[in-house]
Length: 378
Image (cartoon, rainbow, N blue to C red; front, top):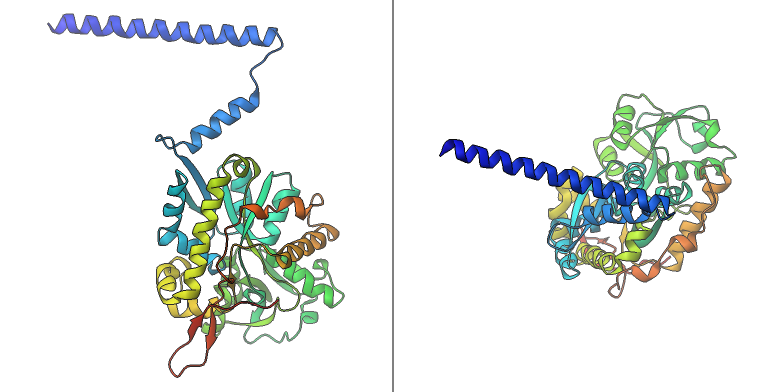
């Protein structure tokens, strides 16, 4: 019995090998005939098949691959992630999602360019740079904005008291991030350029280490680090974006995905808007859900939120601000090609917002800050 079973198994395997060889030969013959007849298999069909395989989770639903960043600037997206709003809204569109976290906008760009992600969120400049380098991307919604959520900081004991004092000094920032734009803007006000300072390309975490060790004279950094460094007494704000930089955070998708799955993008935006609304209506619940993701406690996170307005809505003020960023970056050689912002932005995919943007604001209280929904006046 044992011998008979082994013989049958061997014959079966040999038969399978012969059939596989015939299939391969047939496929090669078909490819050769198509090539000779001038009908080579279209590469775009192969790419589409690969994309479908990546996005199909086996149940016939679409998977949205999200490139995230762990910063309070994007708190509404994180609230949507942690409290299940993304799962809920995407489920209504027969979709699920994968969540990958990156340390900066330029890294999100790399992941998008490599085809590993379908949608990401970042500050204004990285999204524009992505388009200028040839990536076929579309801004599909706002995430937040805030002039005070980005700042140039110096050590608490630094003799530097003005932006003009930065001439010849070493300044750390993430190249290609919106921090680079703020530094360039503030230097320009003093008749200076980026060439007038020594620059160090550092991630946010490396900037913190550098300023703690006095390895740099200044850094250009965003929240949560501004509030943390001030609270620790390590650094102080030299100047922030007030009056010169709106500081938009945006969600941007590959244009192909947005075109093929607009319902999924709208579902994503609905989830993010729910996160924004919760931050305004119940900041205690919202901060408790996501503070751990940013390495701060809930109380500090609520202080940070005072500097930000969370909304998916793209108003004309936002489009104008993003256009100014693009124009400035083009004039100053930051972009490889000029970007038409009106063509880059698709306002039709943003979620409908409730009466106003979600902007936590503090009011005087004997014990702690309270929060209300406020309409920010531009």
